[in-house]
Length: 484
Ligand code: ADP
Image (cartoon, rainbow, N blue to C red; front, top):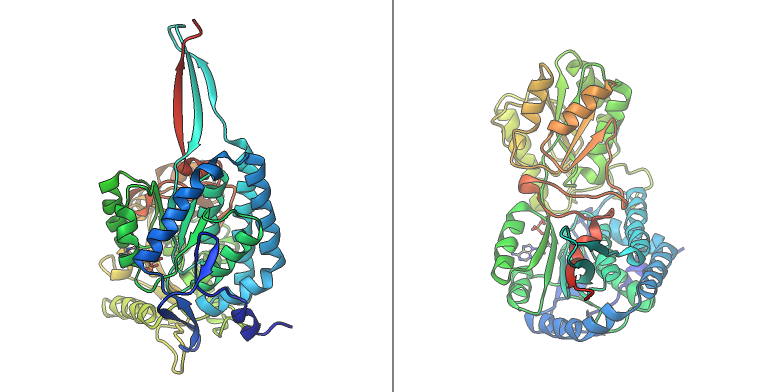
């Protein structure tokens, strides 16, 4: 059996430039959120190294774009197989660096692998059109071309899947890419880069730039006219800054930003299903997900029973280091996040919310926060407008469908909404009315590599996964053809 130490030792050292792992002058620490201890030290790439990686990406770009789609597809398929063959190592790395229970990390590895599989299938389906102009005078031919070198920036919450969701379509489309993992969780991404190289990716097609100082590294890359695309997943705050910086070069940009998902439970809902869906939508990834249910809005006739049953389930959840086979909830990512969640809870309680379970962090080491259920959270509480990003459920009541929709839409975010009802007319009506990019209908989980993931309003721009995902990495060229 491979130990934690074996798996950590297998993580490549350095940053990846032009197909070579290179040591850097300095390193930065990666912590185990369950203990606070240092897990590993990782190469700290500098802006000069980033520029070299971009040089290599630019050199590799024409050859990669000209590589037959079938060959790109087969390479992604090989990477999918290699990733799954090492699923246990990847899962352990995710648990160590990010904290989620091993079973969930295994789920993330399968989800991450799915993007490689899906985009290996899409690589050979990049289409074009041949049309007659309306006046019959010419032919309108469209082709799709890769946008060029991309910068892919990912967050710590799904360290592997957020990267495959970007690098899969980028490579399928024929783009070269620089990967910039989150400083909290670079380990699984380092191993992913090695898997892509083992699968046969030519030098320079990907570069990997871990850094403890993201702004310093990313700023000059965004200002470099040779970079053609930014795909970012992270906070709305940083996303706005990077979108503004991208505007200077008119970079293509995709922004997967924060959410504030409403979870609506109507009076006719199957309450067993709603509670099971609520647990999934709240506790998956410890609530540290942009699609986590942030506000449970329950019809006034069902609210009391919903709170009771959710409390019963949440208080039975075992909190432990993610490597503990009995753990159902791990630590949150950092002390800072733990303190922020605690502050949101105390703010709600100060304003009159009632605590049904949890509410305060346990003593001892590690950045744990217990599953918490609150009711009677007033509209002006901070957690109503902010993303909680932790295992805290707040339940509010609504009176009728119009009230439910109004409350659901009363935030700046628009990523996902969930609704539970047995009435198909209502389900479709409310799904239409929700201001968001995705809706879970009688289901607490929407993520799927074959579906378009993304939001509206402050939740960002663009879609990842599905048929749409590859479009973000392609530009359309139109040929006006006169047949003479
Ligand atoms: P989170 O709150 O989830 O940590 P962030 O938006 O801070 O979200 O981080 C998401 C990603 O953005 C990480 O890879 C991080 O290193 C990167 N990042 C954070 N700040 C900046 C910045 N100013 N410029 C470029 N990248 C940044």
